[in-house]
Every structure is written in C-alpha cells, then in structure tokens.
Image (cartoon, rainbow, N blue to C red):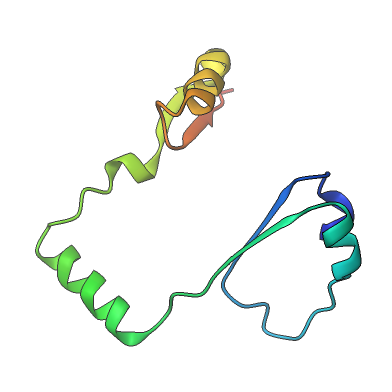
Length: 96
C-alpha cells in the first residue's frame, strides 16, 4: 500500500491513469499529512504540438536525458543530483 510506504509529510506523485478504480484511505493521507500530486496531460493537441517541435528541432532535450557517471563516481552523482546541478543522474556499472 503506497500510503503505508510514504512517511509523514511525504509526497505521492501519480502521472497518468491506473486503468481501474483504486481505493485510498484518505484518513491515513490526512493524518500523515501526505501531499498528493497528480497529472494527466494527454490530449491530441499536446501531442501534435510536441511532434511539430520535435520535427523542427526546437527542443533542447539533453538536460532531461541525464548525466552518466561510472559506478566508481557514485558519490559525485549523488551530490550533483542533491544540489540540483544535474536534473537526473544515470549510474553505469563498470563492464565485467
């Protein structure tokens, strides 16, 4: 149960749909002061605009893809993620 797993003052983020109804114990959500963030942003016009921008090469997506770090540099990766210098980090294990 997600509500059980989240700590006091934690946040649950749901993007998209479950595909079926779910039950959420809102009393527990309120008692633990959990924040619920939801997003549903799918419609034809959004996708059409995105495809047009992609075709015109007007989107800078590299920052969204993440910076790669070797496993031996995990501490730097964590520090940069925590500071916000990198939006997302990818830790790649060394080849065996």
